[in-house]
Length: 115
Length: 119
Image 1 (tube, rainbow over the protein chains, first blue to last red):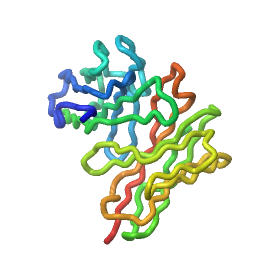
Image 2 (cartoon, rainbow over the protein chains, first blue to last red):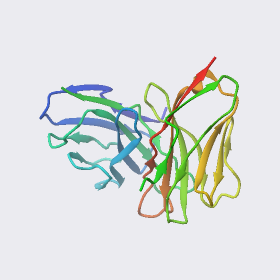
Image 3 (cartoon, rainbow over the protein chains, first blue to last red):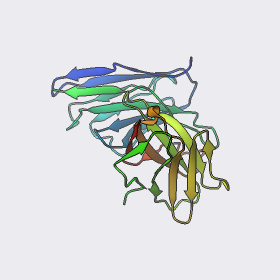
């Protein structure tokens, strides 16, 4: 079945360590996105990529980095510069060149806790 | 200013009754899309319904319908005949601009409404 796989589902790290969250999709979607969700709140856009080897900052990119070397993969690194990294991270994809609704499909999320 | 506002942090609804979740939006772009997503306690985001700014009819998908009032900039979600499995967080989201343009398809989300269905 086509979908988005995020790993790990749960991750614990010490303060000051960099962490990389994996996101892989087999939907043949052009565009991929990373969102952050804090408890009881909505999603905020961290980074997005419309095509391989290209990505743009979202609303809260500081302290995060991404790469898009393959169409299927869009890993997110949470660096030590991120002041409050404990959150739920959601990866999504969409057929960028679509029309109409062009719905975002989401992965199951990765919950990062910094101790 | 908030682009998507959901004023109801939480609601109780009796099983089999209908419930309306409010969403207002703010954009100056004539072309936009409005989405509703459901987030169960497991965390995944499930797409429910979509309304385009140029769509003449209100969108419907099974038990979900979207009450789109363009002049008032509101896009309320109506869930009919609530079921216990409808208990979840519900998010309204907006895409500004044409989806095929360079801006991509990034969405702005509201703060969500938690719905609890009572048996």
